[in-house]
Structures are given as C-alpha cells and as structure tokens.
Image (cartoon, rainbow, N blue to C red):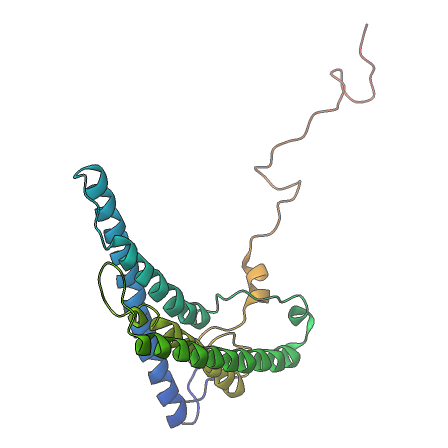
Length: 221
C-alpha cells in the first residue's frame, strides 16, 4: 500500500537516510549536552567546596568551565534548532496564508542554513590558525584550539538542521519549523482554556449595589 492508515505516505529511501542522520545527530547532541551540563555543575560545586571548606580551590576549574560553556552553547544551538525553539520575529509571517508561510519558511531555513555553514567555515579558519600557532591554556596546558573546536561543529550541525527543515517542508503539506516540529503557533491558542465569563461559577462576585431594603425602596431614616 502506498499510504498508511493515518494518511501519511511511506518515507522513501532518501527520507529514511535523512531521518537516520537526524537521529544520529540528535543522539550526539543529547549526550554532549547532558554530560556537559553535569560536568559543569560537578566542577562548580567541587570548586566551591574546596575553596570554602578545604581552603584550596581547583586550579583548572575556570578553564574547564570555559570549555564546557563553549561546548554546551554551540551544540545547544543545533539542539534548539531541532526543537524549533529559536527566536522568531513572526509579525509578518503569521499574517500569511499557509502557502505563503511555507514558502517563507523554506526561504528562511535555506538562507539561515547557508549563513551557518559560512560561519562554520570562518570559525574553522580561526581554529586552524590557533592550532598552527600552538597556543596552550595557562592551567591545563592543553592546546587552545580544542576549546574552540566545538564552534564550527555547532555551526555545521545547525546548518544541517536548517537544510533538513527545507527538505521536510518540500515533502510534507504542513509548515514545519524544524525537521520534526510543525508550526503549531496558531493551534496553541485553540488549546488554551477560554477566558472566564462573569456568569461562570466560581467567579468572585462583584459588590452588591442593591439597597438593604430591597430594590426600588429607599432606606428608612
């Protein structure tokens, strides 16, 4: 059968390959981000304990945290793109019909993906220059370029995610803001509970303006 019961077409070989690449990148991002944040927390806590309880801080704590911050920031850039959590200025975009939004999303994703790959190229040149200079970090004495190696890697991952978004929008009828996430901005408002009305039970009653002797009667002197 060419279609599933849900009405979705079976993915072809190319889409299966793209989905496999997406899963590999997702696994890589989740492992790197999880262990990066955990190591950063352990390193910070251990440094505080050593400083205030033992009187001796960890001499390489700052360098390790700087490395982990770069790691989490640029790998997290690709993760945010995958989840469709990047900042969007959608005032004009939301006013377009579905076809216009899809066309604009394809243009935005393609252009942003290209910019990410250009930034990856220039960041690679910078990392390569650091490697040729042979600079090392002051405390750990490790090559300095290893600290910034994740910058081009993060840009490449982000660019791939944007290009996957372009492919997904060409394949599917809905508007996708990432490879797996449909643009559901409009549907969010439909899922919110309705605004409370004055006649709904449980609402705080307003002040009673009825005269104490009943409506239409004047208060006795």
